[in-house]
Image (cartoon, rainbow, N blue to C red):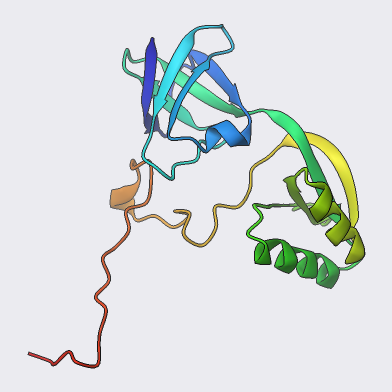
Length: 172
């Protein structure tokens, strides 16, 4: 079985594709099948999310491209940017993963299908429509969006140790 564990930036040749919904792209240990039907095992650091278009080199040297599967989602739009911001705030307050989209001047949020959240968003004045689409939510404040050059090939961010200063601490 092909094993994937090394993320790469580019390749001259793509040897296969792995299509997964977001729910499976969040897992750090996974057994799946390539579009060719071949079984593959994925081993990544905990907290790693496989993103659409990323490339992984297998233990045999082959390169596999990750493809975000289309899945049922809600597309959330509003009449004003302020209303959309209110919706984003309330979704964040409920720790709901959300994708921010619409760089073409028509901003939207995309969330997983959830009837309770749909009712809440409609109550806030949003238009909520079902949409079959790839779900690529924001990584979040601690999701590893910021990297230093020396961290480029790591699969997950490495937390920095932070000294906690207590009132009883004295300068030496």
